[in-house]
Image (tube, rainbow, N blue to C red; front, side):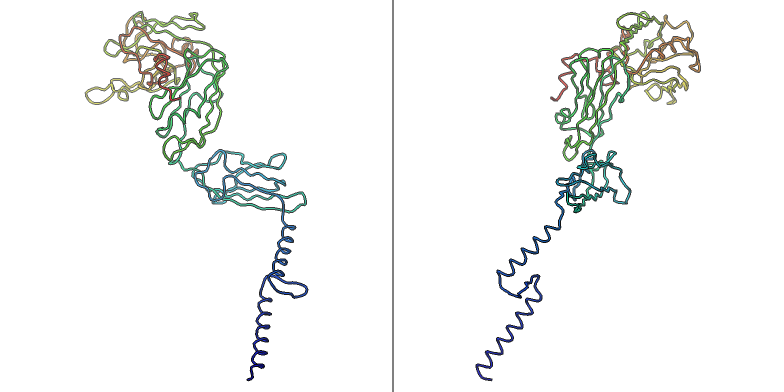
Length: 416
């Protein structure tokens, strides 16, 4: 083959190869021209055409796809810019639907109920822009697990009416090491304008109260803004809620173990005096200001549960139907009706194992007994002040009895 033929053959092969490359590339032109400039112009035209067919709606899902330890309060929010939402679907990983609602302006969506902890959720959202073009967005996330979160069980309950001595008491299910951050996320205020301070009894319990008893008729608001607050290393809060309760009439009862009488006062005036039987000399009743924390028309009292046992290990007493019982301490101090004691003991001798007893009848159905009257006229949060027993003052954390600390001592237990 001559050099001329060889050159013509290579040129033909090159042209053929170039044609193959053109045909396999993602570009093209009407005139079939090739070269860098032609390819760039063609790609730009394709991109421009695709952009003209895309929706301008911009959907945002919070939290972002793949998130772990997501909030159970503020997660699963969907918003859109340059468009309106047309459909949002949310399910758990197993396909269970989660109810939610698109806002009136169709710019946002959120679930109707609080999310569950340690649960994976999937979200699918669709929106349209002004031209009717649809945009889609999908995300999946997992909410914070119980091991990595904490909650506070609080008292009193939302919407209740309580006595003037009722503190706000919060018990956390995890030990709190970052107390200042948690306390900053909790506010307690009253329509009375009273200053409220909080006191940490330990790593799991914080109570809040004013210097003096709550003003009667006032409304107290507890706000928990703990969502995402780190209470301890790797442990965050999940609660975000507001609770309100009302303070009822001002009732304070004074029990005198020496005179064996108790005086029930409302607004500082005595409304009734009732004979009582307090703790015996061997089992004296605690002294101090105590708050009624529970009420039971009838309840069982077994001495073995509070350390009063015989040699056989059984309780020194086991009464299965104690009438009109109201708890004053966690350790077992009650003020309650007594039907088993002689009527003559009330007002004359102290015979109990540490409780305050009032004359009553078996069955708790006689409304005319002193025990029934006091039960019917008492509410959770009322104060019972026990005096002259000869025993020590009850510990402030034994029940809801922080009133036995001075205001200075109380405030010293605050972390903010």
